[in-house]
Amino acid sequence: MAEKEKQEVTEQPTQKETPQEQSGAGLSLNDLGVLRNIIDIASQRGAFKPNEMVTVGQVYEKLDSFLSQVSQQQNL
Image (cartoon, rainbow, N blue to C red; front, side):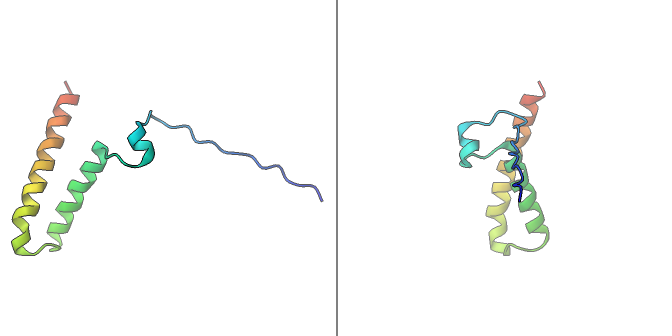
């Protein structure tokens, strides 16, 4: 029986990752955008109690403001 040769497939990263991203410890802007969307969807579906909405809304507004500021700075 002839053994089949195994070929290794290596993935080429499309962009350079920071050491934090490589270890999985960092958050990217994309991750923060996804979190903003998760909060939005969860609130629309009634996942939060009424007394929690103020806190959730405050965090959402901070996150949205931060992402907007970063987006504006990147577009300059």
